[in-house]
Image (cartoon, rainbow, N blue to C red; front, side, top):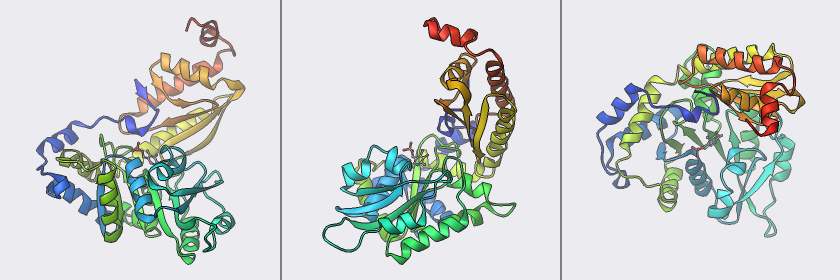
Length: 355
Ligand SMILES: *Cc1c(COP(=O)(O)O)cnc(C)c1O
């Protein structure tokens, strides 16, 4: 199978598994796991924040951040399609009594500055207390511009709001914007704008499990309490932290390979009639399929061992378990399907229910 559904599907490499087996362990709820502590120090240092907390998932990491920044009756400003608002089960409202104030985003994931300013409520008992601005980078594979990050977080700060970055794919953004310089410097240019950042180890970095929340010591102390409340206090989690440490040592620079493969895929798709590549930055390619053939194309790909997601717009994600041969196979399958007449063999079978 060539699995392009997400970069979460990666399998730990042999070297990563060895690192996990070698890791010294302790009870992390007592703060005793040396590998977890090493990871937390390492990611705090990379992001330039005072402290960090290892988390079982990005969802829990974002939720702990929201709950650490906001109290009951506070609100956070967030993109209408942002992960923390749309794809995390409404956790901020359900578990944090935090009111989301979602705003429309453009194709780059940006909320208009005027919309952000208008959404910040005056101090008045009629209103929820606007406390936090949350952004997401990369956004659908797009690395947000430094200008926008500076302007949006500057606006938030002038109004006394805290700022959080859902940086699930922060390292993809940093590698894409490193421009030959150091990736850590690029990471810092992004996260210096924010009070807190959540990063995933389980996506392009290739670890099986885990995220980290980074921020001030005070924020992380609050987040530690919420992580425990949410059931995220883990014991010998150094086994997992070892995988994340290994990923930071060996899988950051190679994200450039994933980005190159996404470009290879995008360029191939661009040449196929009936497809239009919507965006292809970092490791995610979105493509629109004409004549409502998206679902049938997905089925045809699956039958040939290629997995992707989507409906009208399909999504392909590259990662460390995909290579150029896999991308070329996927392209050949897409080309074959799109060149066959509409309602051809595969689609016909599908309509008749045989497929
Ligand atoms: C994957 C992802 C998360 C966290 O997801 P988990 O599956 O809970 O680890 C958060 N934000 C974004 C933008 C993501 O892509």
